[in-house]
Image (cartoon, rainbow, N blue to C red; front, side, top):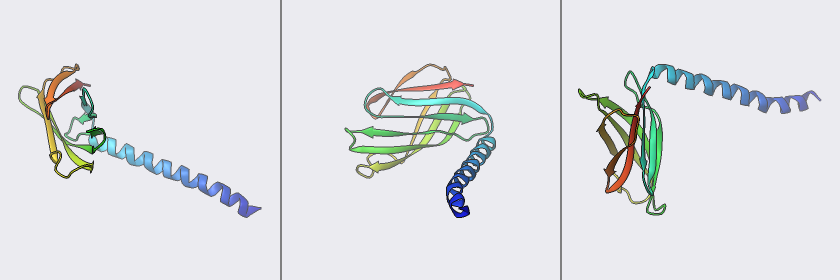
Length: 139
């Protein structure tokens, strides 16, 4: 009987401990990044992708996104790497591109978008010949 009890509670204990570890790790990452100064999004206005996330006050950028183009023949993951604010208080965000499906070199390994004003409203831009919306909002 005792053995049956252990096999039923052990998976629950593992789940609880795992959840707690994940929560602590995420809290530590957020605390290390500092307060959020801006949030940003970049979205295609047709077939394409979306990326966005927080821009932290002390320099790091969060979030991520993905792209699907050519009816799924090209699939890529976007990972934000940096952001900057120029003297005019315009923001530029850069992210790395990892091609998951499709020809190598179909996209550049790094893309930077901006500089753009912090308006909180969508700004239409053209990337690779397609319309996109870039939005930066101050927190």
